[in-house]
Each structure stands twice: as C-alpha cells, then as structure tokens.
Image 1 (spheres, one colour):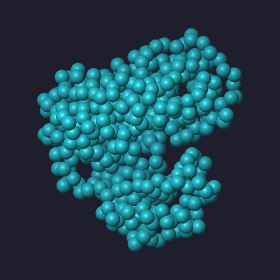
Image 2: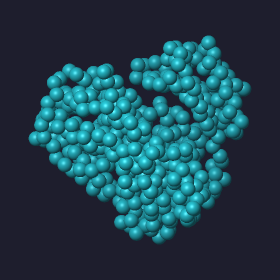
Image 3: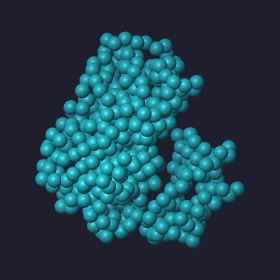
Image 4: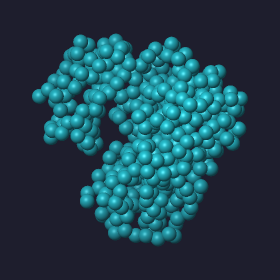
Amino acid sequence: MKIIFGTDGWRGLLDSEINEETVSLVAQAFADYNLQKYFAPETAIGFDGRRNSEKFAKIFAKILSGNNIKVYLSDRIIPTPVLSFFVKHNNLNSGVMITASHNPPEYNGVKFKADYGGPFLTEETLKVERLIGKSSVRKNLDYVESSNFLLPYVTEIEKLINFEIIRTSRLKILIDSMGGSGADYLERILIAHNISVKTIYSPPDENFYGRLAEPIEKNLEPLKQELKENDYSLGLATDGDADRCGVMLDDGSWLSAQETILLLADYVINKKQYKGNIIKTSSVTDKLRTLFENESRKVIDVQVGFKYITEEMIKSQTAFGCEESGGFGYGVHIPERDGILSSLFMIEMLAESGYQKLSEYAAHKRKEFGLIYYSRIDLSYKNEDRAKRLPDLFNRNLKNISSFMVKEVITFLSSREIINGIKFILESHNRWLLMRSSETEPIVRIYAEGQSDDEVKELLEFGRKLFDQK
C-alpha cells in the first residue's frame, strides 16, 4: 500500500491502512528524516485516546530509539497542543502526535511537529513521505524516556490567563470534552483556582461515546441540553485531540466559528494588547480586515489548513491565527491550534466583560460589530476533470460574480502547484466568493460572505453554476 500524507500528516482507516506494519514504515522514514537533518536529534511523542494510539506511539518510540534518537514519550493521553508546546519548550528537533483529530473513530493517524512547536510545512512532510521504505526498520528501547508533558504546559498557561478575575466573576462553566484527549484537563486547571466548572464526557473513549469528536453544532446535542436544563454562563467543547474549540451560548445556542473568531480577535488585540498580524484562512470573515487592519497590523489571507497559518506565524510577529473549523493560535504561545487555551481565553473574555452570560456579551458585541452573513456548500463532484476546473475558471478572467464587480482575485496552490482555490474579492466590504477543490475527496467547497443572507445565497448559487459550467 502506498502511504500518502495529506495537509496535516497522515490519516487512514485502522487495521487496513494504519497498522503496526505501516506505522513502522512511517516511523523509520521519520527517523531517517531527522538523522539527515540534525546531529543527535531529540523527539517527543504523544498520543490520544483512540484505539491503538498508545501502541502506535510506543512503536514509534522504539523505532526512533533504534536509530539512536533520544525520545521523550508521553506517560498519558494528551492534547496535541501539549505535545507541540513540549517540543518548543524543551528545544527538541521534532515531535510526533498519534491522532486522527476529529475524524471518525475507525480512523487513526500521525501528525508531525517541528522545532517551533507547530505542524510540519508541506515541503518537510514530503521529505518524510519520500523516505518511506528506503531503510530497514530498527528497534530498541535504549533512548526512550517516559515524561509528563502536562507540567510545563500548565505552567505556561498560568502565565497567560488571569485566573483571579475569572474566580471573582463567579462564572459557571460547562465543558464537553467529547471523549477526546482534552479529558478533564480544563476542569483541573480551573478547579485549582476555585472556579466553578463541570465537564461532561471527560474520560477519553475510543468511540467518542457514539459521536463524531468535531465540536460543531450538530455533534453537540448533549452540551446543548445540559446548558438548556441548568444555569451556566457558557459552554465549551474540544475535539478529539483538543486542538480545536467550539462555543455555545448559555441558552444552548451555537456561537458560529466566524463569530467566535471575531470575539477572540477583538479580545486578544484590544484587551490583551497582543501585537502583530492576524493570519486567517481564506474562508474566514473579512470583517477581521475592516475592523482590525491598520498601519501596524496586517490581516493576511492564506490557504485553508492551519499549517499555512503556521507558515506565516513563524515568519513575522503574529497576534492571532484563525481558521473556520475552530482552530485558533496565538503568537504569545505556539504557532499551533490550541483548544484548551482558546477555551480559557473565552472564559477570561467573559469574566473581564462584566457580563454573567455569554449570550448577553455576544448581543452587546453584535451591536458594535454588526452581524456576519456567511455560509458554505459542499458539492459532490466525481468527474475526472475536478483538478482542472479551477485553473480553467481562473483563466476566464471573470469581471463580475453575479451582480457584483470583481475587485481582486486571489489564487491558492496545491502541493502539486496546481490552482485548487480561488477567492473573488467583490465590490464594497465583506463580500467575496471562495471556491476550493479537494485533493483527496471528490468534493468542491464553495464559501461566501455578503451583506445579507439573501446575498450570500445568491453568491453560493452563482458559484455552484459557475463550477458546473463546461
């Protein structure tokens, strides 16, 4: 079986695609990569609560050790950002996280982390992929050390969050760990400061208690019901490896990722006074640009995928990085998504506001910022010409999208240097159409932001017809 890495490492079906043999091949390739790049490399390995994650982590550790690489192996299930922080904090050369993130429970995978504490960039991932099967697998336990990765992470969190203002605000916090690797870590951090908090579905479960561990509205019915039936200030959820964060209002209503992004950006820039640029994936609201861009702060659009945010974060000072799927990163921390820290920032934000309920604070901010009009559709497209459709569209040099004039066209390239994303910036503010073609699935995603719900529907429908045209 040919092993091909995607935008965030390697994921596949357990047993048939990801098993002891294939994990061993990837581990040996990763060892070869490190030995080619570094003298006496050191690596950290973490794992989530999926079936075989700990077993695969131990296989990885044995093979890296067998190649004379020093390995720090987590002594427990941990979130991905904890592993990433450990790599950066200890000046290690790389890290490995065994996880399939928010994918269904029949999947598992591997994420690679670089020395800066964030995901591998595309070219580095491809270097590992090219080394698969080039060397014989070597194993021993000589250089493996079991370590508690949580301690340095929690020490860092203590510096970034004002727990005293949260404690005195007397907020009542509800957390849904969704059976993922977030476990009860948020609760334990808060309880240490005498803050009222409850976690549901905290023990990691390899089947995520029958849900998909992606913190979006349709998967958060238990959180919604608990919020509606009891008195809480807000609800927070983390995904399978706790690098993403989903937010619900105290009444059980969903706070969209776009609105969550707006609130977090406002908080870290205007209240926390974090300096630097905002890096956003192209599918994130352009209200970030109209509200926060100025002479000293740029708002930069990148390809969809957090590693593209990371690429910009390690180039220049960054205040905030954000993606539509609930991944948020901060320049004061690591160039990586962190669902734990993002949850704490949401709590601290509400505590500082003086409001007791997130619904009240959100209503206040909607009056200040206005509403976000945004949506997306996913089209099934099984024709073989999928990869050619967007380059062809770009070459048509469109002057208008529906009834709106095109001001600018931004293109995004796949790992094979083919246009796989086009964003049409339209006249006036916060009006655009984005079309993306998946490299791995027969899907085309169309996104739009406008100045009313009807306008967004109009743009999406135009995008649908545009892609179907021959």
